[in-house]
Image (cartoon, rainbow, N blue to C red; front, side, top):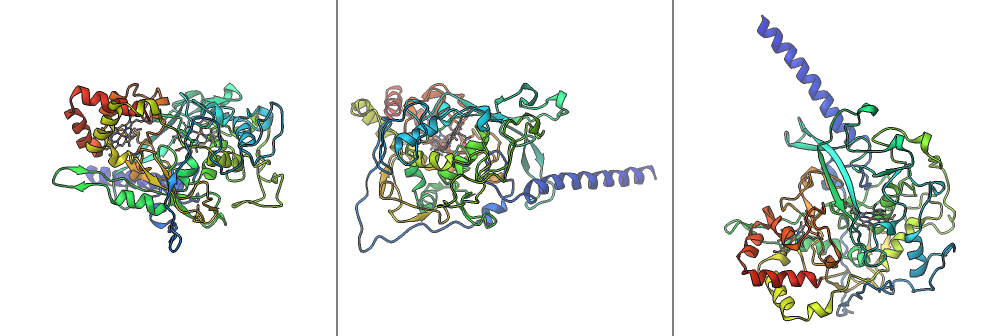
Length: 496
Ligand code: HEC
Ligand code: HEC
């Protein structure tokens, strides 16, 4: 009798638990539309299956042109997507449309009266994207956190599910008032006693040359994935995973359209405009036409600390010539700075190599080893962008002459891999990407002091030694090189 009672009570408790857990998963999945906001995990793997991507290849026949090299340089100069323009003096109000004017806005410091925060990471895009020139990298890292629950009864049943820390996985480092300071929970004084043990730092990424990366056709990335070695016998199994991520500016907004992700450590975005809207909200705290809802402080409302109250009904200044995805409402960004950020990044040159080092025999030998032992399988040396005129970003952007049919040397495949370093955090890719990270593009890597997504490797040797799982065989190949050959390979990295 006692036994039966315990059994019944046990079953009731289990049912109750199952209901709350699955409710939690369901509520984080289906009550919200899929979003490209990198602060919020789209835990729903079905986005991957159901969100369409476009075939972005256009036939070049009968006029096929040889691709040309993309311009490179760490020189604050346009790639000719827009004119260079005149240098903008401090305190000016530039009209976007030239490289100098757009760079000025990318560098502009936002203050509290502009809508900064209430929780934020920095005051301008340049604060984290500046070394050695505006748009590049910096030593600044960000913080993400969440926890794991066991998936009880969705298909496939079982398996861990990543859940964001309250209010989103990004833990903003700064706040306009200490009362709303975020930190990795627990934060007992705010009633948040559950720890968020899955956490990681993330290094700032380079945006130079990203207009070319945006102009890579979906099909090119799918083709790279399909061509990676899949050799059961030798154990050389490389499975670059492309993920489909929402294009925020696709309209109408209710009709979610996707593209193969390529930006961010988790490939969380495919369009520079979507990334700009996301970054303006999550890094600087400025709502904008793509993301109109202010962030909370670990799920707690911040209205009392918001000098510019979040008003989703503020119209954009200029609604006469609406850009794609224009919904007339701009929140704290009536000037539509997010369009300017995207235009600026699209106009940057790709990172340049150090030609002096590249010309040495050591670097050239090192490059041969890099290709021979399999580094280049993921760190793909050359990719050609889609032809000018190709319609990308779910119909919202046409590849211009300056960005189309160009050869770039990113030394990356823009695909997700498990090389044993995954931080357990899910953003736009669903649970299958929990332990995966995008191949770090190695162009410009010589300007980095903190390596890998978490910035925890301080030398090239250490970064290489952390490669395992999909990169296990290649790391072993590296270990099989003589010390002198390893040195040459690293000199090659120092030329990138
Ligand atoms: C506090 C520092 C910080 C600020 C401010 C910041 N970023 Fe970033 N940025 C980062 C970090 C960190 C990443 C990598 C994020 C990740 O994937 O986890 C990144 C990644 C990016 C990328 C992806 C680059 C690539 O090739 O994958 C773009 C594009 C970008 N930022 C644009 C912007 C824009 C536009 C702004 C201003 C609105 C901005 N960022 C402000 C730190 C910052
Ligand atoms: C299976 C794919 C794969 C192979 C093969 C591979 N890498 Fe990587 N590499 C990655 C991924 C993914 C990352 C990012 C890991 C992270 O951030 O946690 C990375 C990161 C790096 C970084 C750090 C760059 C930065 O900006 O922080 C270096 C350096 C690097 N790889 C060099 C190499 C070298 C040299 C080889 C050959 C010995 C190699 N990789 C082979 C996938 C690969």
